[in-house]
Amino acid sequence: MKTLEQIAAELQAYDPQAMSVSDVAAFLTQLVVPVQQTLELPLLQALGHVLARDVVSPLNVPPHDNSAMDGFAFDGSQLQPDSELTLAVVGTALAGAAWQGEVRPGQCVKIMTGAIMPAGLDTVVPQELVRVHASDGNATAILIAAGVLRAGDNRRLCGEDLQLGRAALQKGELLTPARLGLAASLGLKTLTVWRPLRVAYFSTGDEILSLGEAPREGAVYDSNRYTLYGLLRQMGCEVIDMGVVGDDPALLEAAFARAAEQADVVITSGGVSVGEADYTKAMMRKLGDVAFWRIAMRPGRPMAAGRIGNAVVFGLPGNPVAVMVTFLAFVRPALWQMMGANMPAAPLLQARSTEAIRKKPGRTEYQRVWVSNAPDGSLQVRTTGNQGSGVLRSMAQANGLLVLSHAQGNVAVGDLVEVMML
Image 1 (cartoon, helix red, strand yellow):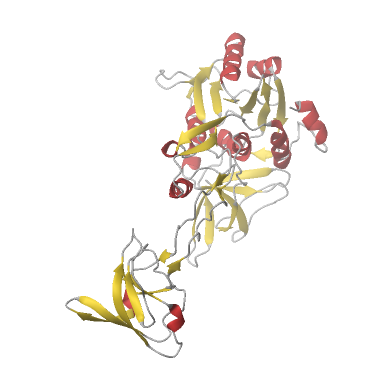
Image 2 (image 1 turned 60 degrees about the vertical axis):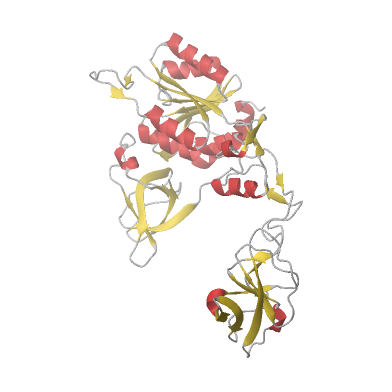
């Protein structure tokens, strides 16, 4: 495990007082280490966990050629591009059991969706594309018009979805509802996953009120813990809420020590402003190997990162929006890496700005925006109001973050801009 000094030495022109967003991301990639412990979980408990090993298919899915439609199965070699085809119906194939019988040239079998294709048959014509001749309510023959289908249509092949012995799911994949369904289609009852990250978090400052406390002059209610709880639970982390810790050295030291002992990750909000002499920064320095950065970004310029014991520590700013932005930009990717997840960076969509936006080159800016469809079907974007780092209402009204890059300048009406969807 590298020290912060060793990591910093590997970064070109490392300057903690002038960190770019890309420098911070590169630093954190080397700081964190994936968990190594695994769990064997029943399928219904595995949602949101990360696979710890490849899932190799123990069978073919589907296990046999079958019909993709309700219709009539026949040998497609009989189709002629310019001629109608008449076939006699000699039976019915239902899902769940193989049809017993022989189908000769000029004959077909009525077949239901999912039913095994009878031997020698490779094509299904949907029932709505044929003219049916019936006797006593039972189909006796069908007429297929010229050119309505080709040989092999509407047949699902054995192993078309998954092949025996091939990787069906890969190590590092997040178990989504679709992936759970895929595992179930293989008959698997359990999956091996990485254990969830344990994340402890607390807010700092004498001015922070917990819910239920009476208002007092100069104090504000703590929103950061609830925001962080939501962000962490969305990722499937085990969260340890340690409340609010006041500006008292003994209390802070005890909180950091307790958090580092219980958790893989410790997250704090408040008390990390560069150059600010406060107890939080002093305690981080005393107990661990922690770097304090001034990042060229808005909102969220001050941030701390490092280790206390075996726990990774993130000291986030105190302002509510700055907490969310720094979490989304830096903490979330680092936590995915620790969880063993192969999660690509959040994709940036392009949209046209409906308003002019002032921006100075030399820092990355994240603005709260609403993305919608323009009349021509393209994406358009507008800001959601006051962009101050303490204004949580405009974040609550946003469905994306406008990402204005380090070197970018002002944005004019109609310019294409990049958006990270929330």
